[in-house]
Amino acid sequence: MQIVDHRTSRHDEKLQKIATVTALLFTQKGYYETTLDEIAQALKMSKGSIYTYVKSKQDLVFLVLEQIENTWGQSFETVEKSPKTNTAVDSLKVAVKAYISAVDEKQNEYIFLNHVIVSLDQEGRRRLLNSTRQVASKFEKIIHRGHDSGEFNNTNIETISFVITHLCSDWANNRWFLRKHMNLDGYINFVGEMAVRMLKAK
Image (cartoon, rainbow, N blue to C red):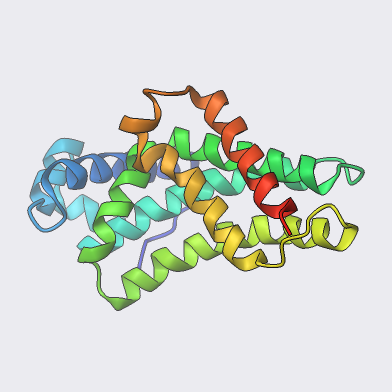
């Protein structure tokens, strides 16, 4: 991915706007059906101006992903700053809340990435899957601590980390169903309790 980097607040705001509009149009019309001309028109920019930020259509996908990663990265800072005296159970619930809150903030972008992955080349799919692994590793670190302290019994740590990650992102990907049954706080509590039950199972 070749995203031109001129880090100013105005530049960052423009990148965020491009990512938001891209995700919306790609979700509505499809990855292949949406043209750069349509994205430029929606942004009230020239096509040439877009190329000052990205170099290809796939780079737009990576730009959306980068914005998502920035959001959940900031959210996980809450977990890393939590008191070291917290139990692994408490830390896991804080992490679940942080990630689902990030998903809620960028729900349209999450839906877009879930749909677009099949349209990407091998490099693009690898990039998206690596992002999922990064999130799962945050949960995995907490779970290892809980396993070492005796709070958690289940040894399928890597698998459960991925399950928790996908349960959190389901708040966006399956929102039409889930929101008929619970609100954001309810889903955060549901996933947190489910994760703890899975990990305490022998």
